[in-house]
Length: 252
Image (tube, rainbow, N blue to C red; front, side, top):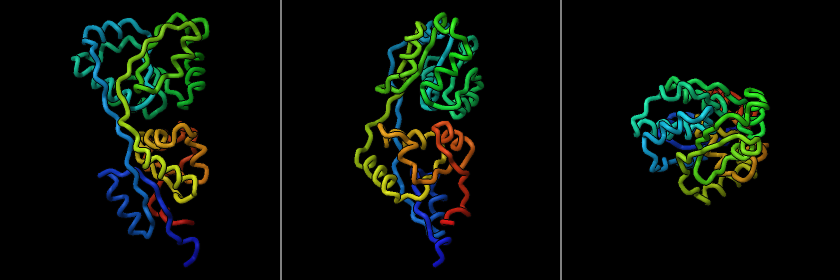
């Protein structure tokens, strides 16, 4: 067998939506290592609709660090019968295009869309937008994952800004055996290419390899996205993805 036609070993997060893709890869003679995605769930809050409305009326900026923060905050607003028009006067910062896309789906406009999810980059982008003289005069509201403290909050507080925050979701306990398996396969070069089909896939892999850097652990693994939103999410994580195509399912 010519080396250019040797089958590849792919990694992918398994879901019913990926069944056809996995079948195609295996029919091409490739091996597919399937992993369970990380699961998020909303956090219950005692805040009433009136309290949330008062909070929204008292802030200048809302900050969404990931797609789950958008999803579960919007769910909270719906549960409290809060109309999205209450956000019209609030400016919005989105960590990347994938987050901004989630907001656009409900016709919310992001004033700042960062090019990276790196805290220093996010803070510098915000600082350049509002100005050094103005940043301390504004009030910021950060939505976040419980247990994952926002480093951006620290940067804003150091700048004398007024910051409030609300955990809106949490990650179910990470399967340690699954995390160990993924790290072993990636570090050992077992996986030739990891396929990402959504920003949630990128989020899952970050959680599994923490505290290690995603870019470092994928040094010897090709990364690809099946659509534009997954490609953007990978780029915003400082990776260099390619667009996945079934015809590239063999080494070449």
